[in-house]
Amino acid sequence: MTTSTDRRMRRRRLLKLSLAGAGIAAAGGAGFGTYLFTSATVDTVGAVDFTNPLRIPEVETGQVDGTGTRIFDLHMAPGESRIKSGSSTRTWGFNGDHLGPTLRARRGETVRVNVRNSLPETSSVHWHGMHLPAVMDGGPHQSVDPIDTWTPEWTIDQPAATLWYHPHPHGATARHVYRGLSGLFILDDDEGDNLDLPGEYGVDDIPLIVQDRRFDGDNQLDEDPGMLSSVGVLGDEVLVNGTHGPYLDVTTGRVRLRLLNGSGARVFNFGFADDRPFVVIGSDGGLLPEPHSLRRMQLSPGERVELLVDFIPGEKVVLRSYPPNLHTDFFESRSHGGDDSFDILEFRAADTLTEVAPIPDELIPVPAIDVESAVTTRQFQMAGFSLNRQTMDMNRIDFGVRKDTVEIWEIENQDASVHNFHVHDVQFQVLSIGDRPPPPHEAGWKDTVQVHHGSPVRIALQFKDFTDPNMPYMCHCHILYHEDQGLMAQFVVLDEGEDIGSVPDGHDGH
Ligand code: C2O
Ligand code: CU
Image (cartoon, rainbow, N blue to C red; front, side, top):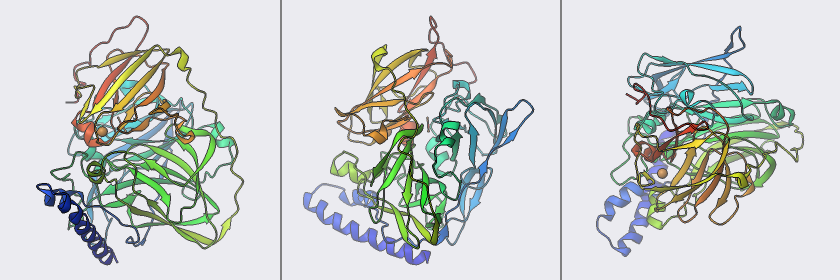
């Protein structure tokens, strides 16, 4: 079955290649053969055999010690996974061969994680979306050498949300994530529990880590971005929770999906094959004030969304990625996957489905950050691999923000390439995209936002705690190749009267 899929996909690709070739040959231009080879459109619609049950990462709630601290163990190590038929694939994982468990904790709890590194190289583990002290953040300064264990501890103090964790070693993040190091970190709270939303993990509350990958002829992960790539590896196949060609048996009339775009560079534009609507209930940092019905949801690397989708008994429907709108020109769009389509996951509804409660009209209030009180407006210009004309320097703290202040950041994509912007420490609110307010489903808590050429994004951020003049948080493009190349800056949160310090020795990531 895999061979016939492969053959069909190859044929499709060849077909696209020759069609595009005709167009570009007509337009002229040297070296277009090479160009075409590295940038042919990928389209797997109708060509995926959904033969593998979707793997659901196991939930890890850790152990609670005598003081009430919830303790998790995460062990990073190389492994081997049966992903496609034929040879198994060399992968990296947390507590297993590939990806990691879904960690789960509640607001108010103190958590500790024993992060043990059995990889052949230095890595780190960052809690993407988590509000916590910079020394616990797991960025490039909290590197964990082989054989070492790093033990961050913090108190969960933010709303229920779908966060995730992944390595963040400077210059190697893309490769470590691509090899399989990613997992979800679900936070719960009373407000979220009190809503009548699907919440039975793996039954009607389904985690979906969606990642593009490219395999070589021996089923090994192809890590070569290709000569002309400016975004790193773009895969031509999609895995969900590490499963190739996945299907999910549905037993309830409504299912909640916790979607993460865990790709290094690919932007997905999710929708269903029959164009059915779905209801968005949450963004990166928590639930929205109200549900919003949509038919498409574009997610860039690092972004999450929670949505509800309804099924009728006995049906099958495919979750798809339609060509994303990258707001860029023909060539850039093509080479960043702007023309690509994927069949991602098939839902198979049982002949009888459990009845569901109506979707609440109101979810969780998102109090607006008081923009009037903003003390500073900062500009961030992304161009190529640089942020404000500089690339990341581990020993340079780029700026300091003050505790107990609100800031407005204006982020601009100055080139035709695809960028997004992720901020550590806080969840922010999007004030405007271009000259328009954000659509309601992007007006909740966010930690990663798409920034398209010609549409500067303004965000509001509120800094309340965790001052440390010497240990910075990161802000960066979450196209992992761009981040590795240096599209990243470091900032510290300062107490009143405090000045920017310097990163202590031994924390320079080496
Ligand atoms: Cu998801 Cu700084 O990273
Ligand atoms: Cu970028």
